[in-house]
Image 1 (cartoon, one colour):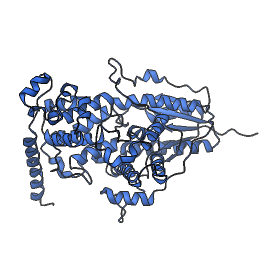
Image 2: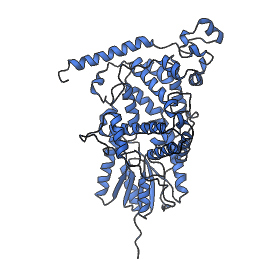
Image 3: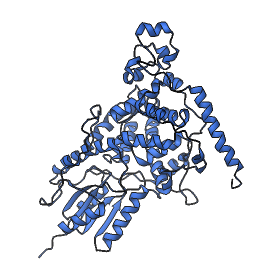
Image 4: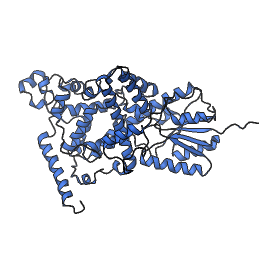
Length: 486
C-alpha cells in the first residue's frame, strides 16, 4: 500500500505570484498536497508597512487567490503570530514541511530562523529560497569578504556574479485539501473606510497587473528611460516598484524583458542598462539593511546622528499636506496622498526640502513615506532617505541642497505636473508658476489668485534655509574634527 506524502505548507509573504517562484516550484515537485498560506501578522516583528501598503496587500492577495483557483487550489488566510499560526495549521493538516521564499530584513530574517529551528526540532522541515532579490545578501561581497558600501562596485560585482534563474510559469495544478478553513479577507479590513481615501489610487495590484505594467514600460517609457524618468509630467517611470515590493514579479524577469527589447532593437541597450542599475540599487539597499540593521533607526554614518534637527510640527504638517508654498514640493506631496506614489525626481526634491530646508529629521519623512507609499519597501525607503540626508552609504553630500524653484523650472518647465496637482495656481503663466510670490500684482489680480488665501505663501525663504542647513553641517563636521577618536 502506497503512503500518501504529508502536505507541504507554502508560506507566501513578499512573493505574491505563481511565475518564477522557487518555493512554489519546489513545493510542487515534492508531489505532496500543497497548502498555500498567507499569515497577517500584526505582532512586534512584522513588515512595518503602512496604510497604503495594506490597501495594495488586500488587492494582491485577492489576485493571488484567483490565480491559485485556476490551478485547482486556493489561498488559506490566517491572522496572528506567525509561528503560532504555522503550528496550528501543521496540527490541523499533519504537514511535514514549510517552504518559503526568504525575507532578508533583519528582524524578519531572525524571526524566520527561530521558527525554522523550532519546527525542525519537531521533525517539520523548513526550506527557503531567494525569490525577491537579484542576489541574496552575502552573495556579493568585496575583496576582503565584507559588504560593499559603495554602489558602483557593488553593481559591477552583482552583475558579474548573479545568475538569472530560468523562467518558470508554475505548476498547472496544485492539490490542496478542500476542507482546510480560511479566514475572510473582507474581515481583515485592509481596504480603508470611513473615509475611503484610496479613491485616487490608479493601480492594478497582482501578478497580471505587474506583467501589464512591465509590458507598458517596455513598449513605451523604456525607450528614453534615462532622460524621461527625471520629468514628472512624462510617462518615463516604470511604475513597477509596488509590484516588485510585493513580489508580483521577479526582478530578473523584468531585467530579462528590457534586455530582450534592447536586443531586438525596440530600445537602446543603454536604457536597458540604466533600468538594470536601478534594480541593482534596490538590491544594494536590501543588502545594506541586511548587513547593517541599525540603519533603520540610526544614521549609517554615525556623525550625522549629531545633526541639530529642528522640532517644527507646523512645518512638518505643511510638508505632509502639500501646503509649503513651493509648488513642486506641494505637487509631489499631493500626488503621494492621492495616488499612493510619487515620481522619483520629486521624491528627492521633497525629501531635500524636509531634511535641509526645514531641517527636520529624515526619520519623520521616512515614517510618512512608509505609511503613504504603496511601494514602501523598508530597505529602499530607509536607504533613499539617508541618501538625501547625506547620512547613508554612498550618499549625496549634505551641501547638495535642492532649490525647489530651479528644480521645478528645470524638470517641469511647462508646468504640466504642478498644474495637475496644484490646480489653484494653474492659471499662472509658466514664468511665475514655480515661484508664485514673484508674480507682479497685476498678474495675480488678473487671474484672481491671492497668496495666503487661495494658496499659501512660502513657509520659509529657501536661501536662508540653505544657509541654516550648511551651518548645521558645519557644527557636526567641526565636532567630528574635534573628536580625538577620528
